[in-house]
Image 1 (spheres, helix red, strand yellow):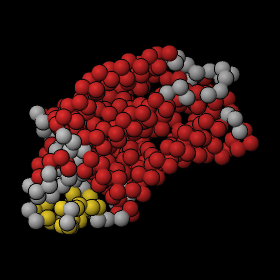
Image 2 (spheres, one colour):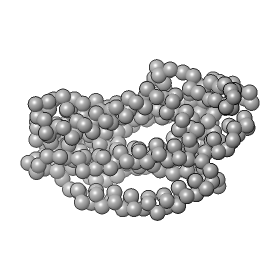
Image 3 (cartoon, one colour):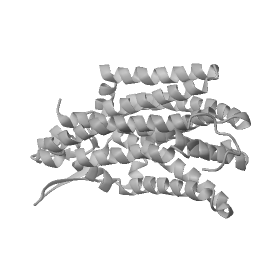
Image 4 (cartoon, helix red, strand yellow):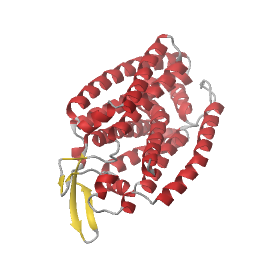
Length: 358
């Protein structure tokens, strides 16, 4: 197997880790105005994610760095074509981080910081799904032949990214993160706040499952045949079974009132869906739609672009770079996992009112 396929899989691992970990703290932010009824309960929710939220976002930063290092062509296309959408996501994450840091030190603007925390959580949770929807559906591309060689660019606008299918996937993403957030809130809280989180968890889980069924039907009927064919391959069925096991397990765990198991099975569902997305798109990083190139329909795919005469080192980094990066990853990734496990173990247990502020 070529090294760039190894890095394709590693990118999937990083995005899956981000979706599981930052997914629950984004979900807590989305549900923050609806779960907390007074200042003590708001403080509990902030402290439930306070020790871990910034570490969770490192997974996204690492995924972006890996994309840049391993697939610079796709990185350049995505960050130039989707510039406004990416800036909105980053702005939301920055506002969210600032609101958490300032909230307990500037009580005069408490309502403003709470509102920014909610909006800064809502925007990424929705827009990440919109991005995935476009990457499943395909985006409009244009090409030009100049002195520097073939240039491929995004030919649409920001508003075209907000198409019905991608918005549907965006709402599904929002419901998925809200389910993660409610599961985490129920795991970390007690009393009336815990009871409210449990009821909310049941509602958003039901909405999530309903949206997943609708999205699956629409995807099977209206999205690229390549994606649906890959999704029903042997590996695709493995991810489908993983997601289905997570959904059924979460339903049974909620009936047993096992908060820990609900969170774990919800996370299993997220892993299955992210894996299904990556497997469905393979080997395409950014698929194209409705554009004809000199050699037929094309996507930002290593083999297809090479047919147009683009040098391999433009499409992905050299084998030496990929090998060195892989060695570093093999050494550092277990350390990251160990550190993450240590942090979550250190801050395990319920968060109670009156124990301080994040």
